[in-house]
Length: 282
Image 1: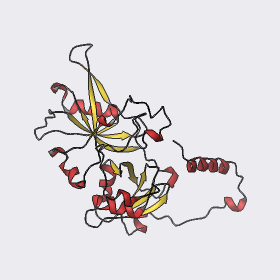
Image 2 (image 1 turned 45 degrees about the horizontal axis):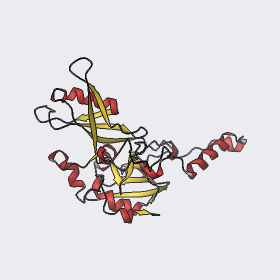
Image 3 (image 1 turned 90 degrees about the vertical axis):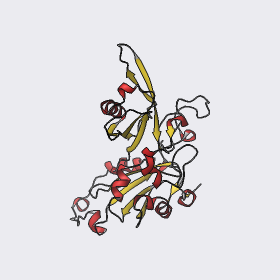
Image 4 (image 1 turned 45 degrees about the vertical axis):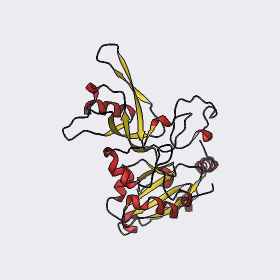
């Protein structure tokens, strides 16, 4: 869904392409290239985008999520406009956690974090992928293994990890797969597996752990039904719903649950305590 700012920016780029530069304008200036790490005293940095029609602000995000990424020292956060933020991590491991773990949400709204690259411009950054754990249910025991998990994960996105027990077994109530997910595509609701006998098909449904707000009409992350340009959000029978969410409470998710001990939203997405402080324009 294009915003007014995005449309104006596209028009500006079109105008710039038609400009004829003068000799003075074409004369190159030699700048002093510095990496963001050097400028900030080698503090690791990343950039985040909040997918929300509300405007987030730096202080609220620092209070709400800074201690999740850097438990003791927290983070620094600078607003870059259009719900973009520059994060500086004050402890080792904070940047890795922010980029590779998740998914992260701020009051239910998706927050995507990417690496800071001093050679790129702000408009060149892409916020298209998140890491998320998927539970594959209704899978026969004979298919609960690492090989099957990788095949399913690569069908959905890119497999990062398949959870197994200490003995290497993946048999359980469900198969758990960590996937790098493209948020530009609708959520997969499940997967059709080949049965043991030729011609047999087995439908195995998905549940996503800590799934942020998404659209029940089109299945995309980043907006909700009333903000969707596809279809009519008032239709009662939708192809997507809250049944795709699950909030882990078992041993498997203790490391995540400890970080989010403040509690979860009714839909199963992690609700940050400082949501009301962290958003303006409601």
